[in-house]
Image (cartoon, rainbow, N blue to C red; front, side, top):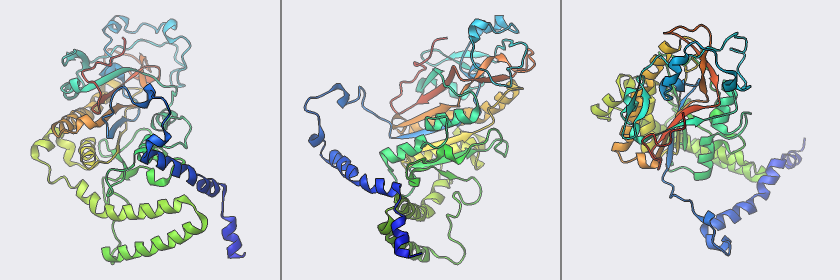
Length: 426
């Protein structure tokens, strides 16, 4: 085929609309540089928010699998009187339930086996499972009225991360990268950390689309840091390739890519150039980021004994603070194995033992460094757990099914009012 004709045919609808949108981009840039030129004749209450925004960065601690709010945050002492009684039809009221319990003949009430106590200046009720988190409750806003539509893990997590149960949309971190840009030219604006449990991951699978860029440029997708080997695959130079040689190669490659962009106008070519440059800068910045040898012993002790084990939740919480310190816009920390349909009392005690101290340490660490006021920390999963038991019920053992209608998250920092003040109705 004629190469000139081939280049002409490469002009796709995406390229056409991409080029056509250049005029809109110029108008948007002009409006940012000279807002008065685009201002409405009369002022409006919508011109400014009610409260001045404070958050510059986000750390999202995601408990994949759905932790039981009933055993951690949602104190329901009256349920002790309902032990092993059937869930009233008036409470369920036709709610959808999963196939894992839809075949049960009964839905017996399963009160929590854990003790709750009041903590902080507002007397927030917190389970014995979270003694360290209870110590920072005055910095947390515990929201016990969160609800969602999805009842199964993948659509629920996809919804929480992207705003839609259907895959394909940009993730939250990608939107923040796109809308607010990066504050550090040597690290990505969006970083993802995966936490191990007992040396492995386990639990529900997490797909890369959860931190993907959807239809946005791929430069905005999350970059996953690994806990073993190179933190980022292929970041290190191969044997025999010096940094000087890599720099020369990237310069030549950028010229070739620019020539191609001039021919076809595909914005992904510009993204590719930017990602090569970011990778080059990360060769220096990432090893420095992951080297915690300069941390004080008191800081390491605050996060707990697992902090020295790469890939653990404690180590990732410390890395999240270090990323925030370097002005990474959005850090997502995943930890799985919260899907406790059976043997919940034993399993949730293990999980809380893993996350409790590091969560509290992260809040205290940010606070001590004067960073909590402009760093928003979010904790929570994709849905909650049922008050009724899945499977066999005893005084010491039970399981809980998925429950999307009411569950718990907490937030801290970034202008959030702490002390458990955003508590929902019991």
